[in-house]
Image (tube, rainbow, N blue to C red; front, side, top):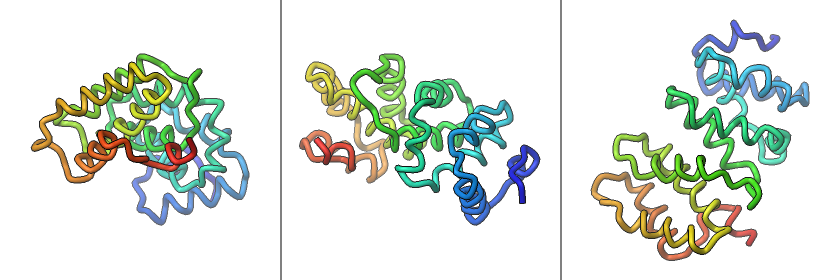
Length: 180
């Protein structure tokens, strides 16, 4: 079955997301698919496209490296929390180098990781991304740690608290930190 906007507008299950992923994989066109559907103004289309892309491996997603800034812009401007979460999860799986540091995105991540009313999954991925960006600059890492120390942990889930503690103790938080 061909991937169309109408098909992506449908609400579907995990199995549907896997099916979309398999079709993208068989076409070997992750970048073309992302450019065509991820930035669609219809949040249902974007959500379904992003959900399918989250099933891809890091190697497969590496095709999206060239649109990293577009993905960052989408994550920061969307009002849809599901689109934001899925986009941030894809960004988190892409490489981020020192030259990729965007202060607007760092500020966004710092704000959303401590926002009490934010979804915990968004808080956690924003914390990971902020950590990755701050790792390039000791002065920014100091600011990040002070921000994290100032969090009233009673408002956060165990997963966010655990990630916070790992950062404060200087432990690797994911595969990107283990490479260094």
